[in-house]
Length: 390
Ligand SMILES: [Zn+2]
Image (tube, rainbow, N blue to C red):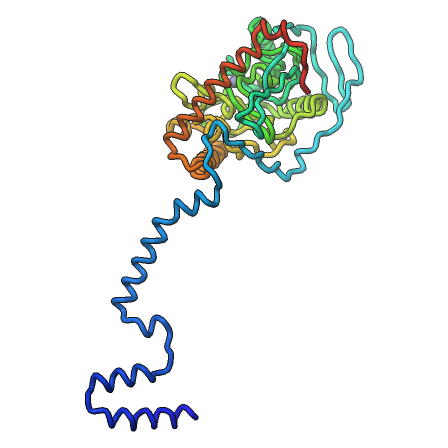
């Protein structure tokens, strides 16, 4: 039956039904199927949407827990490694020592290291905390450096002009004597780009204070022990992004970084600035030290822009970030802070724990690991230890 014939027949039958209600029922019963929205009145449709939305909202937390599996407290939850940056700068250049004299070492990439004033300090020994088993008590005891922290000395400066050379030399010599006495860094790069070894590489130097970092596999607490300290003779101002160091210093830092990464197989992501790693446990804020909060020449040193790495102090240990500190830092570091804060929220949700409680648990973990890191680096631990890491 065609549509026209069918409609004509329906019309004739409907005309024979006197009662309008019955007629309407008949017409509805024989009417062609329409869409759901056409068949339901607007008011009923609104009610249906409202109730469905409400039920879904109530079900979302339950569904998220199902997707995340059994919630675990943060101290027991393994923290998966982050994907390594797909960056050519991850590759290390092979650098080897070519010659050594009583005063200096020479390397295959053109690096010259002045060793006349090198001093000893306590031998390096530290605990690294595995990311894959954050709840386990297995720690790696290590004696080899895992990374580099870059600093500025924030010392007195003269204009970098040829006629000021005598003053520049005097200031540099005075600074060198001071940092050797304080065992302040492993390396100092003066304003002419000359590289001095201050503390022996086998020893810890007093450069990073309270500090934290993480790579794809490990957490590091208090980087005096685990990271090498490289400092530029320089003075910077908050937010300064250019002109902090001389071109000669940048070239030397690139060669020094190449040599250290080659010697110790240091990942590019573990070459970071003091502002990125510094924390203050007394108020649980990041950025106690602010050197290189902005303007570090990562690219010129053959490194990826590590300012973009989320700060582990925020996402792994529950530290906070003061808005004033963030405002004085560079926009590149702010990006790493934002990523870390997003990471924190995501991890709290995945664990099914409210953010405040999650932060509290992370801070407890930090304090426990801090105590352990101190024990690992103590003279007693050094005497007892017979094990060495990478
Ligand atoms: Zn510093």
